[in-house]
Length: 272
Image (cartoon, rainbow, N blue to C red; front, side, top):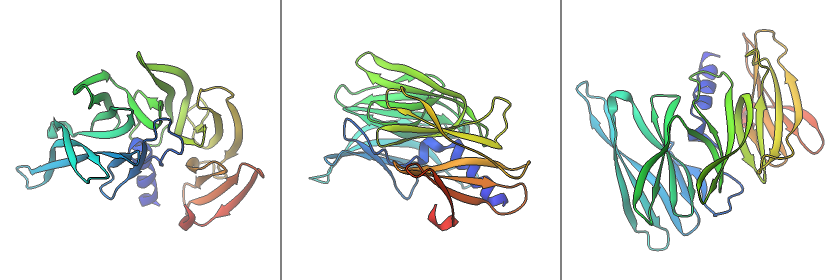
């Protein structure tokens, strides 16, 4: 049980690392996660990725001291070094690729867990700069990005926003909610969990809206049977989503909700 809660906390706090591959991207770049848990963005022609450079500290522990940003030509197999980013190991700095749109790479420079700033690198102009302080991309699909000012180190809900990339920079489309988690793209829709304003995570509603932020509506609501338990949204696709109910004592129970039939089915953990 403790292992599960730890895993869920880590997954939520670092959801910008492990979000599912976006289904829709109007610039054709989509993300996959490799064994090192770093993301690789590809459009079938190019791949954009980060490589960690580590060094042992005085205690003999490997620390990331630099990260190198590469652009790889898939046809030739040749990689070009775009940028070397120097990090501060003492503040547990690390960069993550969160989106690639046209010739611009969007990266979060994270300090520990939860806080981070948004940097961009344009491989056409060679410019690398911080564009937003305290701005984390949770998930991205083409020019649309789900963001937060911070991510909690536990499973607490947090404010989430929808932004889009324009010729003038980043533009806020709307606030998805003040108490949300696990906002994800699936097809041409956005799905996210909302919780009551009292901070309780026992009751959850699942909402959806268009990529433009319009036509927002609640499509599902549930409540943990255990008064001390909680529920959390997990995987989402175009036809269904999975959520988990975690009692205070006992094993978690997973469910799949079919958005076409509006039926809920209990599923084994192996299907998650």
